[in-house]
Structure formats: structure tokens, C-alpha cells
Image 1 (cartoon, rainbow, N blue to C red):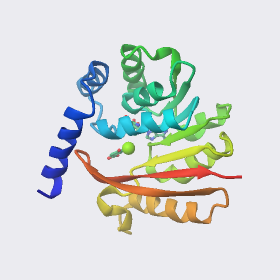
Image 2: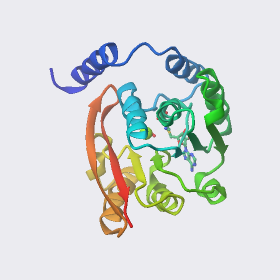
Image 3: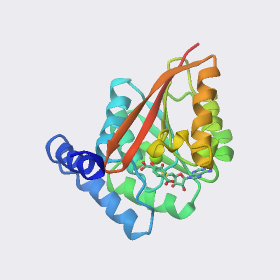
Image 4: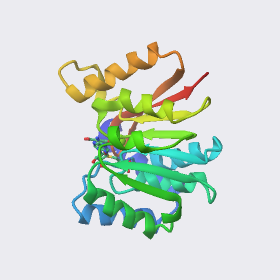
Length: 217
Ligand code: SAH
Ligand code: DHB
Ligand code: MG
């Protein structure tokens, strides 16, 4: 029972036992697919994990880079609770429109600001401090996004970076996006204010992983 079929089956078990039916999240995925958005949001168990991290870390303000249809955004917005807010950055204006509709459908529009444009530009317009950052956009800019997150963050901030394993492609020197992910490991290793780890995951989205970083003083 190894490999993708097994990983998918176990994610189905996790979904049917630990994750209650969730019409707003289901509608988010359905509406995103109907608008032609790619099926690359975090998985349902990963989304719940992000919400839990936001909640147990006591995060009030979250910065997200890479909105897509707002699926991870909805999880994060639930995690921060009624007093919290999310700023989420999306390059594609059409994706951002879909995300705004999905977030409103989940009743969370008052907690979320979807900002359209290249994140390297829009990041320069934001004011911190943020407590948590979730970085999940174009992987070649990951180190720049981490830098901006630190600038907009505070000591003790948590930074989570998605897709740092990519089916093991992080070890493949010929894959440009994976090469950028590989460089992120070296970047973090050298950075005086970052410490953390990366966790590999398997599931219905395949074999991947997230980096979890603490910003120290
Ligand atoms: N976090 C989402 C998935 C994001 S997919 C979720 O889990 O639900 C990656 C997103 O990053 C895509 O929507 C893509 O359009 C966006 N993106 C790519 N390059 C970008 C850039 N330079 N600035 C902002 N967003 C970017
Ligand atoms: C891709 C991007 C993601 O953020 C992800 O979680 C999975 C896949 C992609 O660009 O293929
Ligand atoms: Mg991702």
C-alpha cells in the first residue's frame, strides 16, 4: 500500500474522519475549477494544519504570498479568528477575483485583503508587523519573499514556505524552480535570523513538503 494510491487513500481517511464536511471549502474548490484555476491549492489536511498553526501561535496578522482561489487563505483566516486579518498577494487579477468571491462565500471577507500584482511590487506597499507568513507563489522568488516577510515581521514571526520538496526535484540541478527551492535551503542556513526545519509530506497532492522558520533576533 505504498505510493500515490496509498497516499491518496490515507488522505481520504483523514478527510472523512478528522475533517468535517466543509461546504465553504468545497465551494471554493468547485468554483475555482469552474473558473479554470489550476488544482494546486494545499490539500485539505495541509489547510487544516495551516489553520492550527495560525491559531496555536496566536497569530493575528498573516501575510500570504500566492492566493490562487483563496483556499489556503480561508484556512488561515479561520485560524486567526475574528480579531485577525490576512493580507494575501496574487499576481493574476482573474484569480484574485475568484478568490474574493470564494472568501466572501466563506463569510470571511472582513478579515481578508486580496492585493493584485506581482508580489515583489505589492510587498513594498505593505505595513507590518505580521505574525505569520505563508509563502506559496513563484518558487524562484522564495528567498526574496522570505526577506520581505522578515522586513514586515517581528522577532518570533513564523514563516512557512510551501513546495520545498517537489517529488524530490529539490535535488535535481536541471529543474529551474526546484533549483530555486534548493537555494532557499542554503539561504536559510546562512541567514543569521532564521532557524527552523522542513517536513516532507505525502498525500493526495503527491510528495512534497513545507519549510517552517522562526525569525529570531
Ligand atoms: N496558496 C494557494 C495556492 C497558491 S498557487 C492555496 O494553497 O490555496 C500559486 C499562486 O501564486 C498562483 O495563483 C499564481 O498566480 C501566484 N503567483 C505566481 N507568481 C506570482 C507573483 N510574482 N506574485 C504574486 N503571485 C504570484
Ligand atoms: C505548483 C504550485 C504550488 O504552490 C503547489 O502547491 C503545487 C504545484 C505548481 O506550480 O505546479
Ligand atoms: Mg503550494
